Length: 513
Image 1: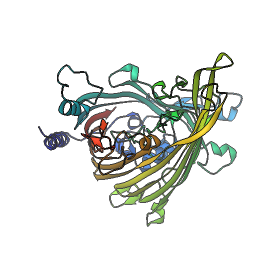
Image 2: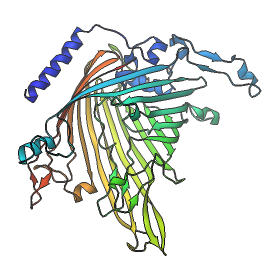
Image 3: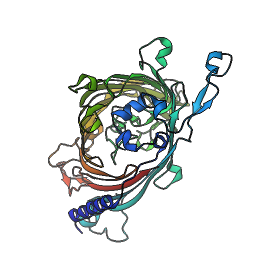
Image 4: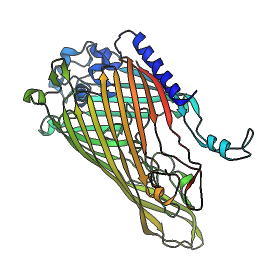
């Protein structure tokens, strides 16, 4: 069966499921507490609408009149009068009236148009059945996704909490791990007489305050630039495994709002730059585990400003814009910038100096800097991001008896993405995304390329997609990633021999409960 027919049959199946399914309401943790649908806070879960952003900013509470809307009252941990007796008694708080627990599960089917299997079997004689082939992407594959548990809520006194954990990934419990787990002290600036919502503190493990979330993205595939590590060429000592999508452990200070006006954040986090020995230059090893053996802390900062563009002044400054059909997202333009500064730890072991074995440690400064924008008009959202990465390269000052390091050429990369989301119907969203990444290693090492693109643009990707809400808590998704041609070998002129594409069609079903 050819590819167009496979795609057509998949769309027919999804549409049939959508049309034959009756209406219902989702019941994750917040839906239970407030007796409302997931679509109160989400455009297309987990993508937030303006009300959802305000709900999150307020510490997982309705931004106005929360006590009037909550259907399951919280349990008091002490009498309200204890507030007057503090500090001679424990300050009273609350816990949610129902356990604020939600579950999420997804599963996938992927079809790959071409890969190394095709190349070996069709282009190389003697690679028939029984031949030893290198690793390659399966042509078709069913795959379990992740099964996650998440808890979130408010303990009173504007203290919010969030914990999510992947119990299993790809059907294996060993692949699971903690995602975010933190306490968030909302509007802590009131103790310092600061303006309302000007200062909030978050402590624990959390995704960095990225312009567009990776951990809770609606896309089936990750943003390539967020996953970009910086691995230098074979002549460089750069093996920095840090990626912007990595969870961080530390403390974050923030303020403002996501639904209008200014927003800032400043995080101080542990190093997360451990490298892989397989990718390291000779005699280089990197610290194992999540942390490096250093007390140095990394810094992440972000600032953005959102201009709500509604004509009506009252609607412009409200949490949601008003229209003939009721509340909706504002028409807005948001502009932002972000910066990350850290050190990558690389170790040279097994060296000799004065007859004894030594270990020399290079702590290479690196930074990531970028800008972002988001434009929204009713049900159309166009947004994008650009990022530049720079790692200093420290080389041994003497290959025979080194005593320190000298500075070599920096390892660099740049790229980003541009995405358009269009909510054609309340349950139907169309997506188009372009990803672009290029790095020092791309330019120095001809690992790919296209006849119409220079080597170094090997990871450009165009990904259209479509998503259906079968219910407010059940979603079917499809995307098709179009990639440039690749090759396993090159001729004497550097031209690719028998190039092929690894385009992938991915379908997914997921639900939250």
